[in-house]
Amino acid sequence: MELLDRYLQAVKKYLPSRRQDDIIAELRANMEAQLEDKEAELGRPLTRIEAKDWLKQMGSPMIVASRYQPQQYLIGPALYPIYLYVLRVTMMLAIMAYTIVSAIVIVVTAPGEASIVAAVVRTPGVLITAAAWVTLAFADRILQRLIS
Amino acid sequence: MTLAENLFENLRLELRRGCLTLAVLVQLRQEHYGYTLRKDLAESGLAIDESTLYPLLRRLESQGLLVSEWREEEKRNKRFYRLSSDGAQMLSQLLEEWNAINASIDAIINRGQ
Image (cartoon, rainbow over all chains, first blue to last red):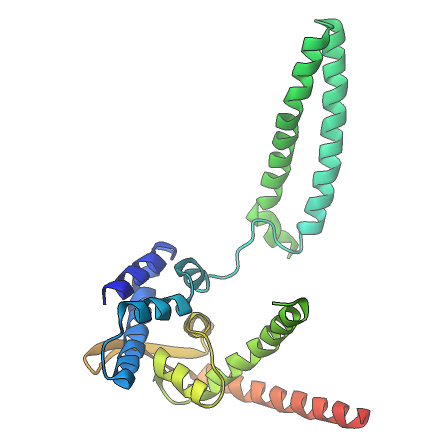
């Protein structure tokens, strides 16, 4: 069935390439057997709408594919509280350091409204960079294994 | 869904997770492929989503509790699973645990009455 093919194709897209053919072949065999049963019960092929409903019931392709993989975390549950704490401290230090440095730079080089505004405008960028470094450090899988 | 219904659903899923594994292992003392296994379990009153059961089979196989082979049946290639000898050993341990838990829960309920 064309709809089933498209559904399986969509699931396949989200599976790791090493296992995808095997998983899809198995899923296809199971689903085709189920479809045959359904059609035998009805005594006719499914209509397009019925087929769509059936596939909808199976769940979205992305979710179906995700079930074949172990749960994955960027930052595991064991590390998460420490991550939040370090993130908070880092953000505070970053904003303090940035404020002091900016103030000195402004006073020494170009006092005036324009340079203050420029420094304030740059603040979100500085914070995002600091947060990104902390996240990268924590996302390290090796670190997670050492702790667990 | 209300908050209480949501909570119930979460607790139910948690409770069911281990039971499903046990039911699958018991059922696979006989060979099955995914779909007939699902049908048999549903007929016994234990309906499992496809997207839960099929990945579970693979996980149990990778843990060495099941063995599988591709074989043709009714002109279609299917992957048949059955309990491995390690799986059989594990199953008898798990069933003991299951019975112990049930007995304890019963005892606790009856004491409370």
